[in-house]
Image (cartoon, rainbow, N blue to C red; front, side, top):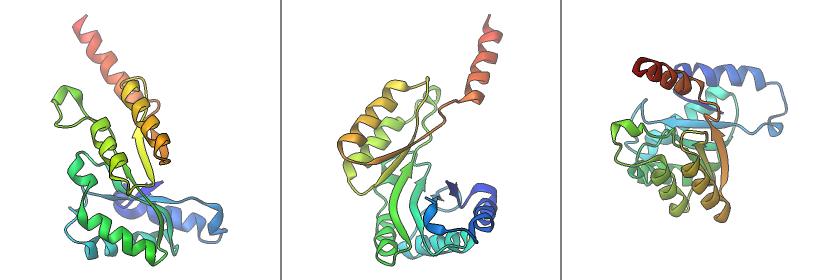
Length: 178
């Protein structure tokens, strides 16, 4: 699991160098398209970015191509992304599509929680895999998303299961208060 933004594409290059001489079908490769690199302005732009990821990964296809860090439901429904994914699937360049959502900063009063964003993806019906944070901070939200995915036969990937950085931050903040 990687992204075009990890090390400005260098993580994809690293993975590509490691797997280039191995049996490709033995790996499940996920890469993500990041809004932080560039907004999704057209399907052709997304296809170009997907092809660049394939080139860096030194492979003809990825198993899952994801929206990276969707922070709102608008990104879930991005027409350019879905048009590009349809074409990339037809061309055999991606097998599945997915979405990741890193969660929200509840202290910043987000417009939508990660549960709302990911439930939009579940209800949308076009995603094969959902990647979500699942840990002790918001276990109820994570459990509801996992249940909805199970009911709709959507694959899941868990991230941030041990959020050490957040734990350390809150421990430090708690000590300041005491």
